Length: 375
Ligand SMILES: *[C@@H]1O[C@H](CO)[C@@H](O)[C@H](O)[C@H]1NC(C)=O
Ligand SMILES: *[C@@H]1O[C@H](CO)[C@@H](O)[C@H](O)[C@H]1NC(C)=O
Ligand SMILES: *[C@@H]1O[C@H](CO)[C@@H](O)[C@H](O)[C@H]1NC(C)=O
Ligand SMILES: *[C@@H]1O[C@H](CO)[C@@H](O)[C@H](O)[C@H]1NC(C)=O
Image (cartoon, rainbow, N blue to C red; front, top):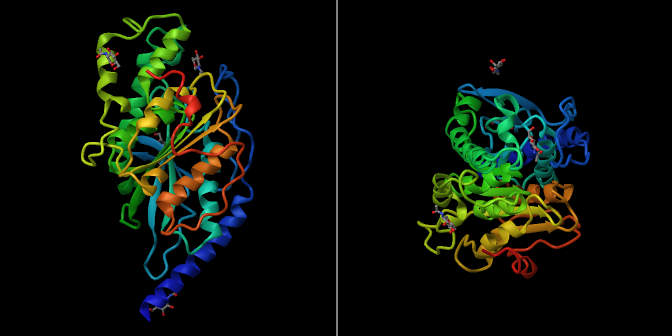
């Protein structure tokens, strides 16, 4: 009897909340996202944020982060609130948390649409957190160190430094954010998801490789293999992958830390850092900056679990034809589904129909991507 009451209350709670969300979310702006290539005009201002989901800025021991969705958390009913899953989002090179505000809002609304469609189907509530990468946004100190290889011989070192710093900041946030968000233990955070675009997508792979508390990852127009990127960028610039562009000390660091250098093909759960995780990666099929070929070798060998249907479900790859270095609404739709499916929904998952896509997604890189660029 008591159980029945609780279930009913829970259902009412989600339903009420779903109605509120529905009104707010219809205002989300579906503007196309700005491509990364090309210089950022110094006078251009990021578009004003669409005013749907709430955004708060908090300083986590002095480290500023944006938190999306605090006001939208389900209110307590008789002292009970659902657990919370937090998505940590990392922006691309030359961008900032503020400049990718509309992308984060779209991602939020894409996760929420599944929660709204099936109010009793969610096991958890959701928040998204974003922050500025080292030497970006409010943390900018020296923009010259962000320049590409043609102007900045240390570019490959600089970018890797930002990728690994992002990785470290994600672990920092997982450690301290709960105490800042919920100082009275008002909510229990039981899920962490890493997500990022371009450079933030490379960082997502490093988070997945090192942070056991992150079980789900979404990589948008990024890649896991820095040695492949070193080969591509040095070849494009007609340079050799040697000092000072790639000092030996740096090559050694990459070889100790990059995902392909870890036991990512191991079937031993205690050795393979990716074991049991769920990963979605999307790339543009006509992306000259971070082509899917940089990822193909790694993704074709990556082991996420024991063979079988579950392991097959754990990786999803989407290479969208004719898309340059740009995140699309299709990629973000799939990202929202992925996060909902693995971190929010009750099992068994009752998903909305998949969006119509120009090309299907894959559990392994399609053969045509494996013929080129394999090391
Ligand atoms: C965070 O720090 C900034 C810079 O000192 C300050 O302006 C802002 O008010 C702080 N925010 C909060 C919520 O404390
Ligand atoms: C909270 O619990 C009390 C006692 O069990 C019950 O009478 C009340 O209806 C509940 N509140 C709501 C909002 O359902
Ligand atoms: C990033 O900014 C630097 C410095 O302003 C510039 O040289 C570089 O071309 C930019 N790169 C991209 C990918 O926008
Ligand atoms: C790093 O690994 C790559 C690929 O396996 C190899 O070619 C290179 O020699 C290694 N470099 C160092 C300094 O260990």
